[in-house]
Image 1 (cartoon, one colour):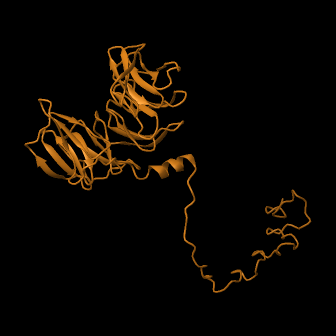
Image 2 (cartoon, one colour):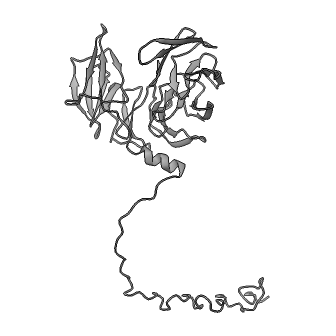
Image 3 (cartoon, helix red, strand yellow):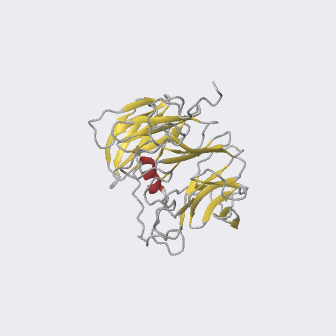
Length: 355
């Protein structure tokens, strides 16, 4: 489903249905040009739908006088697109080994595409500041920023294939490999945070505070210390058949075989806390070149390390190489050329080789 503050969009066969998110009432239904591969995603001014025709289609949400658009790309989308939490930029990967980033505000356009080392078959994770993170089947992990030119923040190999979506928490990219190894990667540098990967991890359910909650390969529920990567608790009695991964708040959702949904929350936290990256505002300003000057507290003048206010070369404001100060005669050529020599005179005087 695509959802924002006003609209809920769903695909039903070749139909795109738009509902009022406040009351669930249908607003309209349009027929998509091509058959959708996945459900829609709401971003900016459009509902974006990946299709079976190597591309995406966009249908206007608010301004119905706009025409829908179709964008043809190289390859089929392998997972639904991911929207940036702070803008209308979206990213998705294709089966031809490309990651595309598209802007959906104003006039929609593809910002750039990245040719990745190995196919990215998992859902792309989005962070604040238009940052996207993903791993490939060849074991390469990427961090990119969705600028017009497509800035690759970092790219590092980790030696194990990745098929699942990363989880972002506490400035880290948590990414389980196909072999059950859970890697913790610094969002800024792309380097490993823990001494070793945590083994036997199947799925990430959620994370907040200093804990990450996962399902192990044994299907048991477990808690991992985010600082060290150690498994600190295992519950063999809690084996959720389906987990609704929550990437935005401090809530865990479990679903059992008969459809019962259970919500877990931190003790004393009655209202959800929205998780945001603390450093992205400064990074975005740096990217745009609009960082505000740092305010500092005035301090007393520093003491002259040479013991006084006079010029350390002993000549006040005079030229330290012997020329006069302002208004005096021009400084003599330090290489010994006459002062009245022409502009093209040899600064070394006579030929040093005697010619």
